[in-house]
Length: 327
Ligand SMILES: [Mn+2]
Image (tube, rainbow, N blue to C red; front, side, top):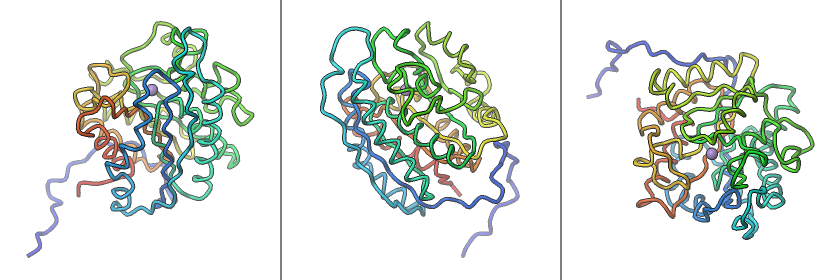
């Protein structure tokens, strides 16, 4: 016998405002695999897409009821520019070339009514994905927001970076700061407005990045804010602070925002990160806002992983952001 459904102990849960009224739920996904390692000195990050396939990311998304309409493999030059010494930005021509391909794939997916999920690879790929999202909304004459989860600021410029690693610069580039070749990708800049951008989970900043966050005008939520308010509250505040004039938002999720005990398979682990449950809950809340339109999941480094558990977690994070429910 089937049990009656259990409405009696339902509690009222505060969620982010639903501004999606009238919008059709998207049921198609495009997976864009970008084995990009040129943004930093961690070559293992190029194995991220392979590990996500081992974790059966496409199959699990389909089991959730989505059609995976396309799997795009972006070709990455096999350069060793990332190993050069000095503080000049490294591999810029190569990363720009990859960014263009990523931007095209992301925009094409969105134009076809599908949700692009770009799987890295290091975080410099967000230069391309956000350019693609921005180009899409620009043609629609609509605004969009940016929700960026990261342990780090990723808001360095060639002037502030001591390493020259471009994976520490993609947020700055998207806001219009940094190397012109990347900033001017697709011929316009900035890609996203600071008053529609939030950065969540930061706990390991280079000193000049503090100034950049302040100067740029984005809304930061540090790990201290999360300890104080809880990640659910912070996520709701973050979605609200994107503004009421957006048609959707892009999620750029760096797996290193999660605690290394839970997610060891990253390039630049920072202790004191998000736990398993609160991470899934945050992405569930983003899904429930019905405004999440495009996703990056980056910095998975299988060379540092244990039995592929970080790739499994990354897959669960994607499923949560697509609205997987418990009941
Ligand atoms: Mn990052």
